[in-house]
Image 1 (spheres, each protein chain N blue to C red):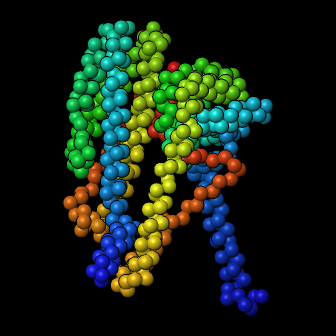
Image 2: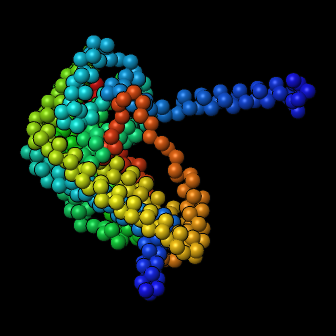
Image 3: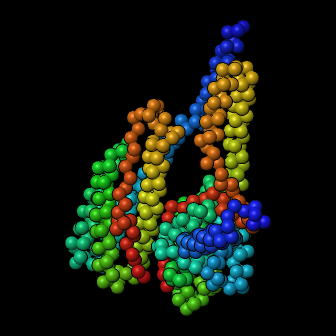
Length: 258
Length: 199
């Protein structure tokens, strides 16, 4: 065993020590650096302030909202904002979770940072006209902040969610438009596929027919493979059945403190 | 007969070439340029939105705090100056124009900050529903401006990087030889943080 190893036991011990230091350093660095929570469900309670009872009453409401209107409303609590203001933090979190549908940007994020005593309703582009900044402010200052002030996080979040949902669902026209939009979406996707198929057929025929093109194409194809190798990664992982659907936000909504 | 074959061959080569060009990064530069221009129009829209809120805000404050004349005229003047300066998408390569735009907007941000600061002294104004709504809209707009600016800076960075790095630099030096790098905002932290409004 030792004979096959090129290093002396002492050197191996040193190497082991060194790597363990590096590993633990890296681990502590990542723990220190911004650690935004993962989107594990419609309620992401990293700060652990939402009582189980509240959770079980809110969760079906959030799911119901999405099945009826397509709107993704997510409640998140975080341990810390990592020294950032809540506005950029909420926007980054919203964008990394991609809340709401891609074409409609109809997502809403209710973010609570109990350590900094900050709360924010971040509204996706598509809902800025419905859940306006002024309405978000009213919800925060009337429904959420007074309850948070006395330590009632469950009650504040539950009332806040109720108010947000009632604001969002008063616009009834949104609900009826949904099925038609989906049909349009599929219709526009078909011709594009046919174009790609036609292009591939043309390419293959050319490759067979013309040796000059074959030479050219092989060189180009090699180039493409070499250049785009790095950018190809980043597969889309979808755990736990809930994930954002490509929506984005431009900083709509409001924040408050308590 | 062979004429037709060579013609179809030619046409197919063109199709194949355009596919190959597209995947070679020929499209990258114009795409990134258009994205940056679109992000710029977002920036301008959000600043415009802020300017649109101001007349209403000024008249509301006037109703309660007419004696704060210098602060109010400061806002009105700064707004007039800021709305005069428009930067077209074609002027984005000119750092001076961007700087003039940014300075005028920063001045308006400062004047607005002063207005909100003095309004703290008027409890009746502070509890006015109209004023509260305007305040939250203004706060929201400042936040949207911050987001739009950040997006613009990112888009410009992507475009400028494409002009200088392989493989897109090949196209930047040939087909798009006229394209110059776009100007970024000089990060002005003071102007970027929205005025803090406490309730």
